[in-house]
Length: 176
Image (cartoon, rainbow, N blue to C red; front, side):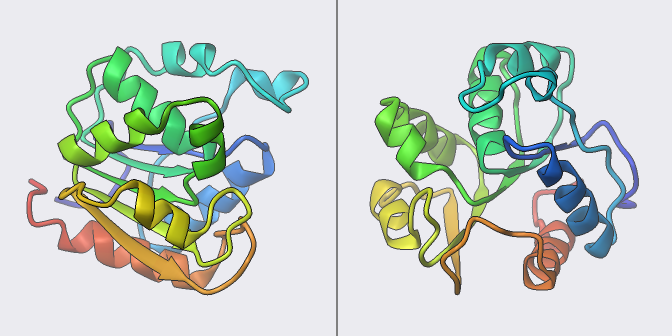
């Protein structure tokens, strides 16, 4: 399958509009072509956005693969549950562990990782939840593969992540 623009792949950025450009760059560096979603909450104060509109906007889609950063991973988990997405695989960059824990939504991550093969790339000291915290939360979820990157930021717009993304996409054994 040519990794070109397809309805099979959805790319969901983080809470800030700037992450859309970062995700577009990562996807391009990985040799993929896919549209990056835009969120209606970007139009206003998005400090603590209501994710229901973002999930509703995705209801008509039925992707097989998702690449998501931060809050995009939470939107993915909600869409998988509420829109009954039957995902074959997901790649999450910087899962917001602290938000999931605070909102008592860690069960969404565990359920997702038990039902969907998911590669999660997390920085060792990510301020939204460290790699160690994430590993502890998803321990036992057999469909989760965790990759630790060095660093203590929530920034994933780098070549190392793009190289991982390229390898992940091309090596999917279950991709048709």
